[in-house]
Image (cartoon, rainbow, N blue to C red; front, top):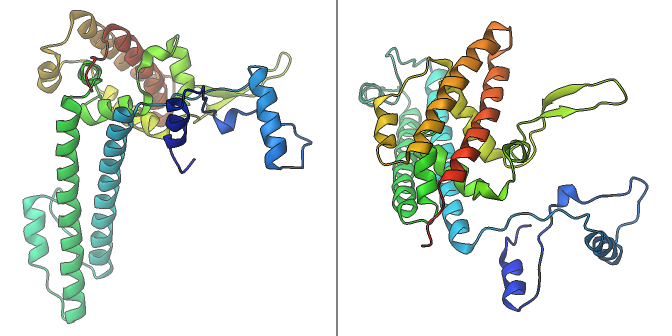
Length: 308
């Protein structure tokens, strides 16, 4: 809930057993129309005694702190996108269209400083929008630097580094995946991780009729999103770019082999799915699902350190 894991930690410190349960997985009777705290407590007690409740993973305080930092950096990135969108919308409303190749470059910033409006209010608004973009950019850079510095001494730093052997998994993708999922060794097999990420097809089958739909989109939205974003890089032929090679230098041989195997397979699978007539978004989602399996395999080879 909104109070976080503070109550859980207080109960554990007092020497009691405590389980945090996933509300979405609590069994409910369809005909039950009466809800009171007493009835809910009795129902939860019976379900817990029967082993019908699903416990969620509770991160330690250090892990939660870095997760909050990464999420704050993500919020700063969203704020920058919003500020840029507001500036572009303002300019578009007044017929000011940048003719250059890419926005937010030095040339684009020079073009912004050359814009002049007849009405003083519009000129003030332009300055305000430009300042909002600049402030949001500085804040994003500051939080990004803080994430890099903090993650370097984190116990999961070796896992973050190992995940970057994968194509489409740069530092921010790797650290976001780790802070949201934790140690993948808590999953017995990659299929459990795929299901946890909501990357498996939904199904409504009965008898001999089998009907499968889109992915369930259950579980952690942030981790699923960064995987799907990274999966788009597999549209191109398999190769080890200079950036990936620099990340591979200090990694174990088994991790490098898994990453290359993943790249060869996933690049070929994307082409096969497209050749079969699948939409690009469907093919990329399928690639993201298999990426999760390869990340699980890498996670079995690299263990967290004992420090903070």
